[in-house]
Length: 222
Length: 277
Image (tube, rainbow over all chains, first blue to last red; front, side):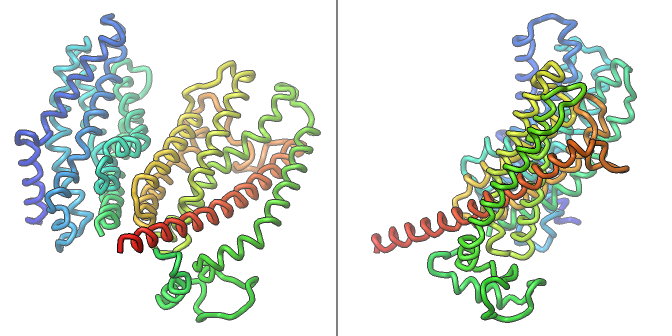
């Protein structure tokens, strides 16, 4: 257990340092949310209607763009080879890295959501609904994104390919996340059903992601 | 994977591993028509088999397609949709095959990852563009059918969305194949992605049951039997079989091309090495 704990602590520490990428994700989230009113116009009612969708899209794109940090930096300095060769099962190591990535890059997004909800004219109730669904859904984004990151780790220009591979797998999370937010805000449908499916998606990716990522890393690094 | 000079070597190597569940017998000298799956691991034998089988397969496919198209043309008009219903005879087999091809790729992916069957790589790579084409045709014929029927070319309905996602996954898979230089490493990466993407197949199949939006629910493969009248069911099944044989023909031809392409690549690399030396 201490090996995994050390891995988590190391990844969080690296991510929180300058150039580590944790707060850059929040900055990108802010940029995307700021761009939307320029695109759709400053109509506050429209922005409030689109608010959950804009926040979810921003969070999805922000987590997508910080994904290649998951393995690329370690691959470049050789520590990924050490992790693959160590006695800790590679699946658990991948899960630990994804967990650290979520803590360092996903949680700040959720913390930033209330502030950005103000920009989109969302009231406190809507913003907390969106934040709750993000809390349930961003682990799914991180863990399924880890599969793409592992597949693209050995490609030098793999950034865009990574996005292309991960986006189809993230679409269900986006659909149910926005559906749950809308249900909490407008109360036209039940909140429980999409929210529970969102939690199920996160839990499934918690299991499937590390196994698929470990298999990809093994074939990519030998 | 030195296919150019290692055909016999591959065969012996594959044989000596002795983990194959399908043929425990050693090197057999039986005639070609009693081959088993492990014999096909030898690319030269596979090419010989393909050369013999492919013309017949293509001929049977053409005949069945002709019969199917004739039956489709002779089928009665629907009381509601008129003659437009005949798009179904092309749209539905394409849709079925788009999912079937992903299933075939999953089986090939298992062959790559679990058994390291040499031709599983080739089978995977060859099937991807064909499956993408079937999916694209299903989407396009569906859009052409939807315009007169639903009034719109496209709708973000559950089944249409999930088939579009399948199409994106096919394209992503093809991009992954071309991104990695070494074919056998690309095969393993693609195998993982194929197996992960297989989750989309039950979603597509059951999407019309879970979300009742626009696309009609299942009419053929459903509990309680088909609801299609025989006049429509028979041509549909004939076209489905014809399309499946079409896929088989195209797949074998594509596998043959892929093997030859790898041989060319190996020869080019040998030539480059020879020149450098």
